[in-house]
Length: 85
Image (tube, rainbow, N blue to C red):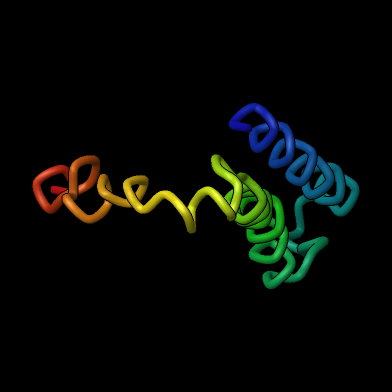
């Protein structure tokens, strides 16, 4: 995923570079500022959100019928205030 993000930004910046080269580096931008933010939001957050909503470790029926699966979260075994800081 990190390599993908690197090449994504390289391709994005190269278009800006060649546009600046053609315009004698006058400071004129090829893209508006909101496109930079939208580009990074779409290509960095959307895949993570998609993966987190579609990745299921257990079936829904098993989660409902086996409450012991929730004990790790209730007892703060994997994530606590100490681990956070």
